[in-house]
Length: 108
View 1 (cartoon, rainbow, N blue to C red):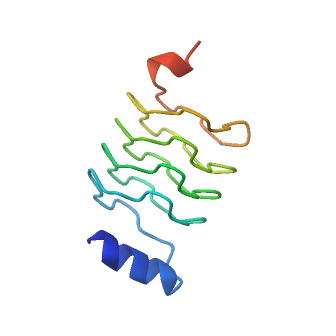
View 2: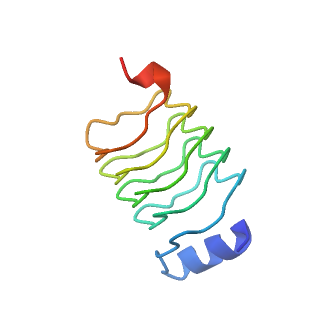
View 3: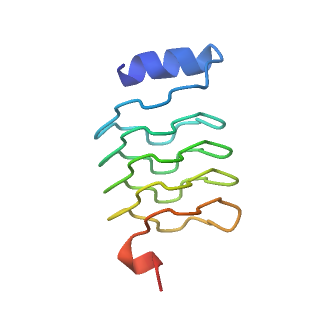
């Protein structure tokens, strides 16, 4: 599925996009609140300033993703792989992250 189709389906009310392959996708500045991307591969995607509040990103591969200023309020990142991910200027205080693999700079 390409980004245009994803946005069309999301706009029509679909929220379940489990196991989707979005490697290097540019999803910058989008509103994807409540989306289910569990198990999705988002390696090297650009999610800068994207609204992912209430999103399910459990078991997703987010390696090398740019999450600068992304809204992850009440998102589920259970067992997600965030290795080498840019977490600049985001608040993770209400994000569920049990078992998530965090980038080295975020582990201190």
